[in-house]
Image (tube, rainbow, N blue to C red):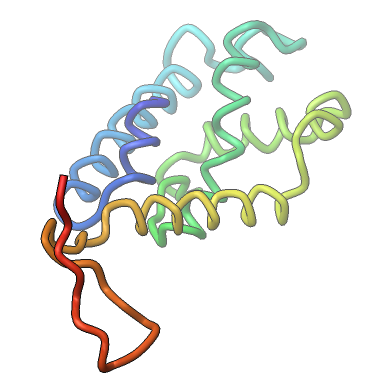
Length: 146
């Protein structure tokens, strides 16, 4: 689930659509496990108390709403994943989790700055023989040499 979520964050266009589809497939599996599978009827994957699976899945899942807002995709539709959504809200409501997870606004700020930095890194680069100049319109591009 984690790598697919990362791909949604890092990509755009068709690549992002494919990554969103993959995340939704993974969430369908989690939903099924909570609704019909081994974890049916449990408050948490670990039972009444959180277990290792809750921690592993929960520590990444709280980023989903941040990702949705920053990237503009819908991953945690309550109608499509009611059991997952209920589990995530229950997990996030725990005092220990609330104390450990940074405030939503801080997460959004961080995610936006990382996304912006990634966009700048993938922007078209200047040609190898020219360097842009913002000093003067009269200045000619400078040829680069080794």
